[in-house]
Length: 123
Image (cartoon, rainbow, N blue to C red; front, side):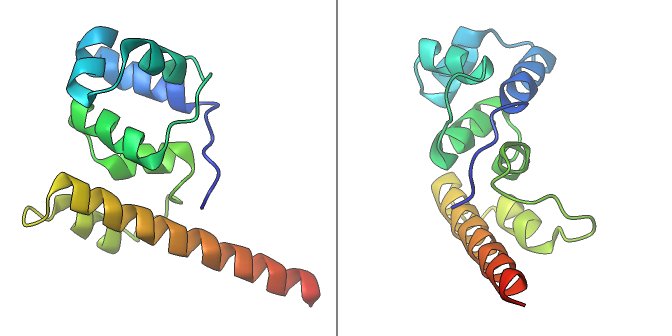
């Protein structure tokens, strides 16, 4: 699985929370995570799992994909919104199903990137 980049993730979450005019406590309650843990995520002291990111995204009412891209789990690709956008916007799926599908998709992408890098090094 891809390594989560926390360098700008906490700042991004804080900016989204500020934009939504939510306190740290309100977002922690909405995301069903502890207030101290969310504070540590925002300060870049914790590396949240994809599941935690999805819960934070749900609390902020943004797509989990947005946080996955910010965290480096998913690569942002211009014009290639079909798979992730379709999953993120499919109202027939539960939030947990969407999160799981996006995690699987991200894992496949990371695995394939690793395989390409190994192949490139052997050439």
